[in-house]
Image 1 (tube, rainbow, N blue to C red):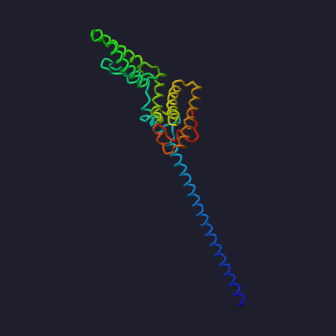
Image 2 (image 1 turned 180 degrees about the vertical axis):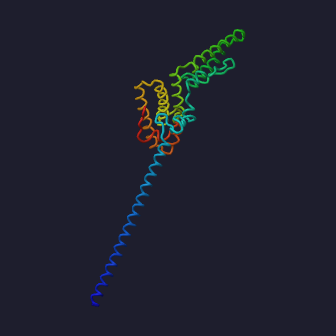
Length: 273
């Protein structure tokens, strides 16, 4: 009888121990599963938060691919006040500039394309002076004075003709291209300007893009120039990519000079118009 009781008691103890172990294992499994779920949830939240931050950053830095400035600032915000903007003459500003006071010796602010400073000095300085000296007759001072006055009048007439205020939009744009080359071109050993440098080409294309954009905005059905505008945007990006590879330390400075941000010229550029 005692043997039977001992066996029953041992069985009960073993069953109780097994039940406790089972409950402990079950609790540990639940705790482990909960910890994994919490970790997975936190990881998912972190990923979603990172995506939201990336989307917010992309939206904040999203730029106008044509005009080059962040959209949240305005498509031309960075261009205004840039080095390129300061060197470009607006046709309306040129046309409506008050004429110079020729009688007091003033000259036009800007001349037609192709007239260099040396040409101006020759036409309006050395040549009239030499002509007046050759025509001077000490025995006939009155006649000499009249000839000098006539020469002065001819100089004024020539200045009026060559004044950029009389130029067409195309004529002013030709002057702008020359001004851009002189501003952005690297000086050569011979004293000239390297008009083929990446800086010059990027500046010229940016100027052309802005002009073409204004034209397309006023002529919505001009599909040919819309396509040309897209081509120019990608060409500018290609030139700037090359410049970045060769002169990375100057890259951001050039973008600033042109009124552009990186997101307007880097990555996949899909120009929607």
